[in-house]
Structure formats: C-alpha cells, structure tokens
Amino acid sequence: MKKIFSFCLTCMFISISYLISAQINFDKKQHNFGELYATDEYFVDIPIKNTGTKKVFILTVKKDKEVSYLLSNDLIGADSSIILRLKVSPKKTGNFKYPVEVFTSDRNEPTIIQLTGNIKEFEENALAAFQSCPDFKQKPARTATDFNFTVVTIDQETKEIIPNSAVSMLQNGQNMANWRTDKKGEKTGKIPLGYTYFYATNENYFPSEMGTYINFQRNKVVLELARKPVVIPVKEEPLLALEEKVAPTEIEIVLEEKETPKPVKEEKPAKEPNPAKEPKTTEVNVTENKPFTLDEQLAETKIEPVFAAADVKLKNIPFENFDETYFKPINVVFVLDVSSSMLVGNRLELLKFSLFELIDYLRPQDQVAIVAYSSKTRLLFGTTSAKEKETMKKPIERLRAAGGTAGGDGIKMGFEQAAKGYLKDGANTVIIITDGAFNKNSDDYQQSIQKYKEQGITFSVVGIQNADKDEAKMREAADIGSGRYIPIFKLSDAQRNLIQEIRFSSYRR
Image: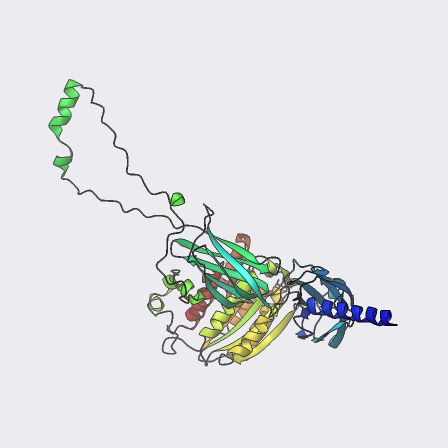
C-alpha cells in the first residue's frame, strides 16, 4: 500500500513538474470577425507560445465541419512559438459561432477558442474556395501580437552595412514604428505580426522600400539602398581672348618647318573617389535616439507637385495651405479596386496609405464617400463629413483583396453617390483607384463619365503600380471626365499625389 501511495505521489510530482516547466499561452481565446463581406479575410492567425523549459505537442484540434485549421508546426519547443490558423466557412449569411478545442500535451483539458462573426455577403463561387485553410504564404489578418524583429540596412552594390539609417514600418496603410539602425547597421525591437511595408532612408543614399509578410520564422529583413552619385565640382578655366588662344605666327611656323612635335608627357589625372571602396561605416551627423518619423523621411524627398505646370498660381500656394480662401469645399467619391490583382506587390498597402494621408488632410467642410469593387460592388460608406476621420478609416483598414474586377459597376455606383452628395458651390468629383483597366461590365462606363461630367462631376484615375499597357486607357477615361491620371508607384507618390489632385480639383480659379 505504501509503495502504491509512493508511486502515486511520484506520478503527481512528475505531472506537476511537467505542467510547470511546459506552459502554453494562447495569444487569444476568442476572435470576432465582425461583419464579413465578399472580399474580407475569413481566417485568423493565433500565436501559441511555450514559456516553459520543455517541448510541447499539439495533439489534436476538434472543430466544427465549417472550420478548417493549419499549424505552422505541431511541436512547440521551449521558449518558442507556433501559429494556429483558423478559417471559417459558413454555408449561409447571418451570425455564426464556432468553438474550437485545442488539445496540447502539457494539460489534460483542451483550450477552447471561440470564433464569432456575421456573414453579410458571399463572393461568387466562394463556397468552393472555403473548403481548405489557406497556406502561410497568404497574408493573414494582422494580429496585435508583438515579437522581436530585426531590420538591417546595407549598400546595394557592396553589401556592406549602412549605419544610422532611418526605417519606418507600415501595416495596413498606417505607420506602426520608426527606428534608426545602429553602428552595425541594424535595429531590433518589437513589432506586430503581419504584412509590413518598410521605408528606409540615409542622407548618402536613395530611399529604399519594400513590403513583405513577417512572422516568427521570417523575423529579419535586409533593406538594400543605392548610393547617391558623388558629384565632383568641375573647375572652370577663364575664357581667353581669341588672339590669345590661337597665334597665327605659331601655326605658320609649324606648317612650314613640318617639325614633328615633341611628345608631351601625359599627366596622370587626379584619382577620382570610388564610392564602392569608400568605408560604409562613416558616421552620419545625427543623434541615434532622435525621433525620425515617416513624415520627416518623406519630407526629405523633393517632390514636385504633379500638376504644377497646369496652374502657376496653384504652384505658388504652399502644400500645407488648404484654406477655403483658395480651395472650394469638395465632395469626393472614391471607387476602390479590391480585386485579387491588388494583392500583387504593395498595391493595397499604397492604396490605404494614400487614402489615410488624404483623410487627415481634409477639412470639416469636405465630404467623402467610398465604393469598393471586386467581382461585386458595395458601398463602404455614403457621404460623410471629413470631421468623422476615424469613422472613415475603419472600413478602409478592413479592406482585403480578392475576386474579379467589376470596374464598370463601381464607376456607376460612384457617380450615383457623388450626385447624392452634390455640393452646389463646391467641387464634385469621382476618383477611381485601380491597378489596371476596368474589366467586368465596363463597356458603357464612358457614357456614365460623359453624362455626369455635364452635371458638373469630374472623373480622375489613380493608377497604383499599373502596367504601361493600361495607362493609355486610364488617361483616356480621365480626359473624358475632365480629370487627370495620377500615378502612384512608391510611398512618396502615395503621400502627396492624391492630395495634389484634390487641391487641383477644388482650387478657386
């Protein structure tokens, strides 16, 4: 009996010790997807961290048949993490609630994760796509989990480190962090998981920018910057009088005597500096701890107003001046392309960033409405005062790219909204933001543009990293609507070009 009791105590001690040494923490135990539309993401990533000293296994995951899951790994090492991706696939619109039980080797009872939400709209043929959980190459919804991340800046040509570079990080179109690399050209800090857009500057280099998904496996990004050319001042020789430069008598002597000129000893040219061989660890005259925001970085990039040549008076008004003395109230409707092609490159990130910059720039008397389209078209929000900045930003944050391109339907809905919010003494315009042509149901979009132009509503086109072949159609559509084609290929474009279009449209001439 004593042996049995002793054995039970030993087992209990081992069990307690194991539970203490292998402790699993779930980043969240409930997730509300909110209202889900056709282009929204139907999955969420949940980091699971092992804070103990022993490895832990994910034994099994019990869930409803309308839920699928994917694990980045079923083994969680000591002091490490994995990601559990959960995707919901409801068969009908309306509210849903799914409990998910996750069994781990460190405990007897499962950890329960509650998934809730409200399906408002299905994408065409979406149910077939809902059958499996997307792999980790697809961008998931951003989570609030911070983890250690390192960014490094190097010379594009020599691959040597660049110290004291300013690096800004954006997620979902908004500036999340501003860092400065140290003497080793790197910086480590906390940043949330998710798709991240990086923008790096250094006074000796051109800006570098890129977007990528970061997670526990991809926890380091190297940014390559191209060095600015070294400008060598040229010493100008004073101009000599013609008779001093050419002496006729000397020329005659040479021709008559036909002397072979003595070889002139060539002087070696001054050795020009080779940027590739210059040390890349030269200190920049800055304080490492000095805040260096994204706005400060972009301000260093000299940007000429896109339409400065079209109006000299507007060119002379500072960019910061959006006073009603010079600019009429504006009623603008944005028609946003959120089709699957916007997943390519950094298109969706640039779209969101440009809209957030504009919303912050607008005045209380201005008003905005937004239409989004992919395979179908929907109204994100109707005419709203620019005083409601946060109200306007929230649905933009939720935008995800998927589906086809119903550009024609989007343009029609955009004009309908512009007509509803028409300002008699203001500027009224529809601006489509897309990466390409307006494909589905777009045969008669030109008629809509012409019709509403006669009612005083202009039409402009913003091209987000568009191909050259699509630019001609974009310009043609903008010309019909008495508007302009606005290119956005990089972050500095996204910061200013859309605002410049609004200034041009509302300027009091």
